[in-house]
View: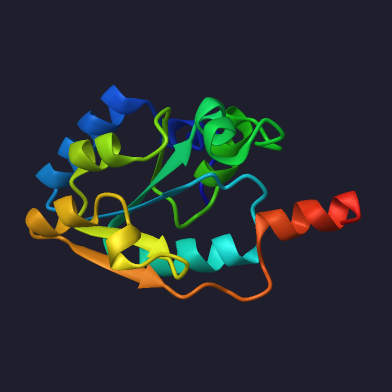
Length: 163
């Protein structure tokens, strides 16, 4: 059983994730990367992350910072702050590393990590996945995982608010 004190050790900043990626590469580990807001974690997220973890030795998850989420989803989001979202994500057994990014897209992070596999949910196409072109050009691949129907953060928020 893993110690809970090691959970925070799986949360990295940009400079630290660069070092962690180099460490993983020295051990000949393959790296999968996915990203998102992960505001209210639900069954659909768990299914996506569980499948994503099967594509490589290590799964790195990029999480939008609070400022980034507000730009993308409006002033009422996120519901949970960035530190809370990162901690919850890092506590998941299938996640090896979590890194926050401030930009609206993770392209800078993808260029640093250079994942072997870039993963997104089924609401994306290869043409709409940020970083797909770069990952493929570096010899990596892109995987699109079908969404679990009936699960969405917006749906949960609407249900709570009575909409």
